[in-house]
Image (cartoon, rainbow, N blue to C red; front, side, top):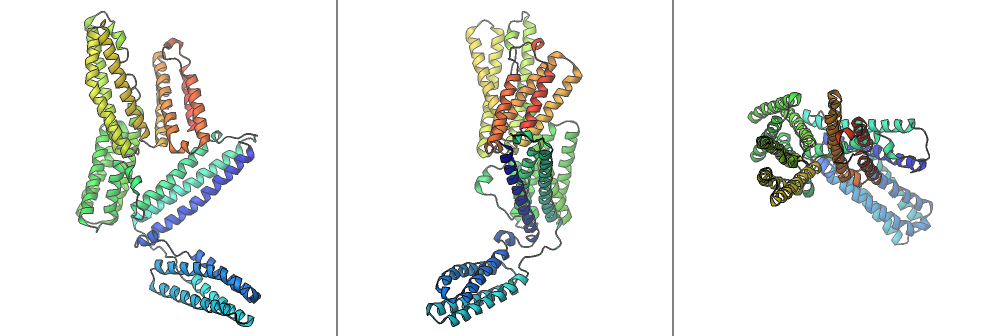
Length: 564
């Protein structure tokens, strides 16, 4: 786009960010004032600015009649419209105001205005003299002024008192994400200012745009999740169907923790939900290693201890700590799940690789030994993939339909595995039997296709930006490990693995809602896919003929971090 068009779109972005952070501040206020009475946020506040605007419109019409009584019949029509809206707003204020004194004041104001307006309508309808019409309009304007003064001085907006620790945490979370959005937008503006002026400008040239989009999305999610945690917002049916098992368990737990004195069944379900989260976290920790395993284990143990304490007696501080640990545990589970999706499917496309070469080996014992090792590798890989698929069905965000399809495909893959193993054994024992060879190839193709479908469903069931980040970290680590080894064969394999993972990232990006709503991002990702294909050597290229793997992986990483 031209620089002028770009600057105009930049103005739209900054305006949207400004409006969004203003709404976020209002959401924080509603969280605070609704601590003791949820209906304040659910029903809404008295719209004082709207009431004042209606009063001003009625007053201006009265002034017009006072200045020119001859226009009273026409102005009466305008006044009836403005007065109808004002009375409706005052009725709305009476319904929403909790303070009885305020209710009475608003009711009195409504009665005064309604009576005076009807008197004016009667005077105009009876075609009284201009002096009487002017006097009636003047009286109405004076009463409008009195009402305006009363409404303006009235404390119609509730004031939040000292907040409980858990409510303060909800408010702080929204403010934190709002601040992050402002900061990332400021960084984007700085980046734009530092860029030399060009006739053509593309959004993809600015890396900070991704931070703005991520911060915007995070703020919206924060407002929604914290509103639901505070029992102010309720998820609609369609949204509920797209929630993961972990998300549902978290919300069930919060229903209990936000209302400790609630019904016994809600309490029991909440405690059971926390136990379910602990169990998922414990299972997840079994496949972790190092510091990640220790962190998850410690988080699970601490959550379990807090649950035991909170189940015995009410302690506001302990309840707040438990809610904080549940949030941390959920994030840790979801983060670990994304990493597993990235890493456990790295070799999923090549089960029983080189088996045809193995079948031609002369020594039978060697063939049998290598076959058993290949089968063991296949079953170990299938075990990892199946466990990951089950975890993603519990933690992913693909929705009930995708999760059910994931379970079905995973079960189908597990059923195909024994058949493939048997076909592989026959392939080795009968290397020249064409029927055996064709059967093996057909089962291998089915197994590979089923495994790839499980991988694609897992990729689609995790948050796109989290997937991109985890994949980028994995590719960078693989590249650094290969650099330290200096093995040409391993370097070539690393380059191939990174390229395949990069293709997965681009596929996830193109399937994301962000890309579907952004034609320019779609175009950029399409170009990245083409450049990636051009940089990828043919499958039968020998390791010695591979392009410099460091150049290839550097190009891949540069493409992804530029366009995602």
